[in-house]
Image (cartoon, rainbow, N blue to C red; front, top):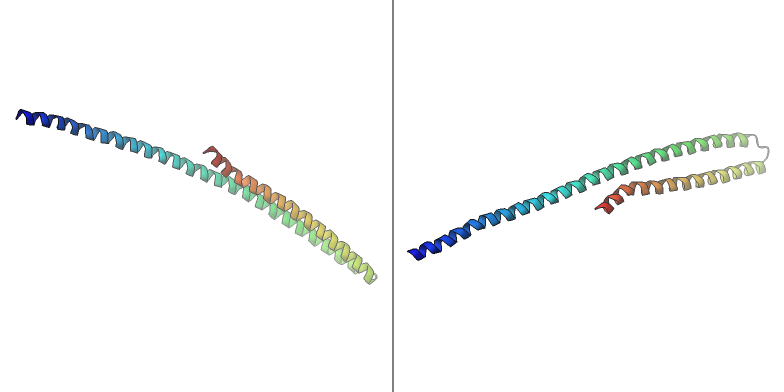
Length: 140
């Protein structure tokens, strides 16, 4: 019986260590999981902020483009009225063709210049809209 008692004591001691070791592993796993959750929430928060900044920039550019389009169309309408008045006062067909040709050239030049300016505006807006995401990716 003495042999049985000695065999039982080490087993009881080993069993006492197993729950402590398991508890430590579970705690370490929970700490690691908490760390992952913290990192994930940080990514989500940063992504939402970057998306908000991007939306603000895009909205400002869309307003600017809308304003530019309205100004361009207003100028085009004014020039169209001036063209109509000039055509009404023309004396011969050659003069009408010259007036129309000059109007077409000036409108094409104005349209090309406006589209170039708006393209630059859009490219700049794209760069600004992507900056928050680029900074977010570079930080992580």
